[in-house]
Structure formats: structure tokens, C-alpha cells
Image (tube, rainbow, N blue to C red; front, side, top):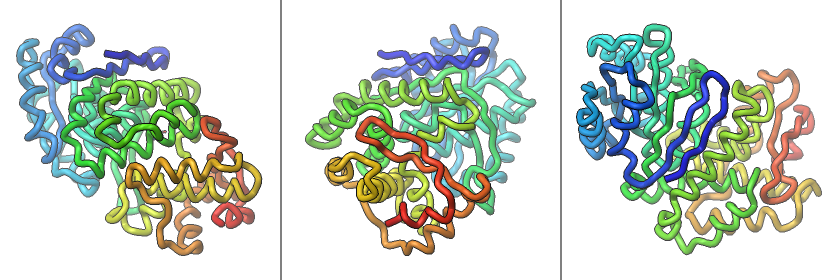
Length: 354
Ligand code: GLY
């Protein structure tokens, strides 16, 4: 069992990581939030049949009655209508301001459930129990909660930190291989921007199965890297953008395929490799870095290129430019384990796309 403390002053919290922690959530909640009388569990149609009963029982043993609210699995559920339905169900379940919401699922459940917690009665406590690798090492930590609008992903949301994150690495055993690899792209990202040893470790496993034996270490190390970054920039005003390595091109690729072909991690994998290949050619990144990234991506069946024209990438990247005036901020690597933010004026951007 490992604990990563996220030091955010008055809303600091712990991320607890270990095999089998799901069955301890009730007891842990009792200690953490002694005033709680009722719990709403938000989960989805894939995860609830596997794990909701275990969570319910753990809460019941701790004397906490719970109401299960299940949304349809998939990104298409992350919208205002589903949020509104979830809020109604929380109200019907009779949760008060001193009660708690527990999200049990991947990124969609965590983001939507967290936003429901942030808005129900102007904010009630919530706890994240992420079940996918992507959610365990990224979206469950850091307090970004949101739903998508027709105009774009995550356009309605808040910064709203959970009271705790309980990560049961045993749950990764039931994750389909493609989604284990999806999360691994983000783990590779952490290695690229901050921890060469983590990158080397990820590159050294024979396959995903061997890596799962070390899941607790990997998840804890990724959460620790993220915690140290958000402690310095909770509201995403600067340094937090380091977590976006590979994401600018990745998002554009995902969007080009209407989020229906590449997973998020696959988009990030393409973005990490393509940008590093180019910055290496430009003399900004140590020679050989892109080849090492390619090797580890191939090991986990992650793509390195997508058939998207440069002008299409530019069109989708233009939204970032609008946010920042006439520039975008890219994350580039000096070397493995050493990422930095680089402001790039729009007129120079094509150079970075090769
Ligand atoms: N997923 C990136 C962040 O939390 O800022």
C-alpha cells in the first residue's frame, strides 16, 4: 500500500494505492468523513456489474447506506443531459450537504461524477475510486471535473478536488488490453517529461502482463509526479501544461476521427512520437530520443502516426491558439525525463509538425 499526499492547503488529500483497497473504502470513508450518513455511488454500465456490489458491501459494513446511479458507459454520456439526470437522482436519494458521492469507474465517470459533486447543493464531498489505468494515473488526481458540450470536450467544468482517491490496482486485471495500453501511454508520458528511470522501467517489461505485477509502483510514481506538478499550479495557469506532452497533436488526431477511432492514449502516443521526431530534427531534443519512444510505444501496441493532413491538424489546433492570443504552448523534451514548456508563435507552428 502506498500513499501520495497532495498538498493543496485547505483542500489537501491523500491518494491511497494498493491491491484490494476497494473492500476498505467504507472503513476509510468513516474515518475520513465521520459526519456522512449516506453515499451516492456513480458508476457506468461496464464497471457497475463488476465492482459496485463490492463497494456497496464495504460501505454497508461501515454503516453507510448507498444509492447506486449507473450511466451508460462511454464518452457520449459525458454531457449536460446525463449530468442533469444524475443530479436529479442524487436529490431523490436524499443526499444532504454533509453526505458524499463516490465515483467508481474510468475518466468519464470521474469527470461527470466530480462535476455533479461540485454542483449539487453548491458542492458536496466526493471521493474517486478510478478503475481504468488512465483514470488511476491521470484524471482522478488533480480536481479537473467536466462534461462535454456540442462545441467541444470538457467545455463545462470546474476545479474541484476530491477528499480522497482510492486506487485498487487489482481492478486493472479486468481491463481489456487495449485500455491497459491506453493508460500506459500516459505513464510513458510521465517518464518522458519527468522520470527517465520510470521510462526505462516501462521499456523493460516483456509485456503488459509483466507490467501489471508492478502496477502499484507505476501508478504511485505517476500520481506522485502529477501531485508535485499540481501542487505548484492547481488551476492550470502554467506548469500544469507540462502534463500535456503529446496532447496537442493527440487531441487534434482524436478530434479528426470524432473520438471514435483512436483512444485518448493512442492519440497521445502519436503526439509524443511525432513532436519528438521533429524537435530532434530541429536540434531541440537529444538525438535518439524519438527512437526510444517509438520502441516503447511499439511494445504496447500504441500507434506512432495517423493519416491526418497537416492542414487538418492546424485547423483543430487553432482553438488553442485562440485561447492564448497568437501562440500555443507545446511541451517538448530536452531528453527523456526532461520536458519543458515552449511558447510557439502561430506563424512558426508548421515547423513543429514536420
Ligand atoms: N490531465 C491533465 C491535467 O490534469 O492537467
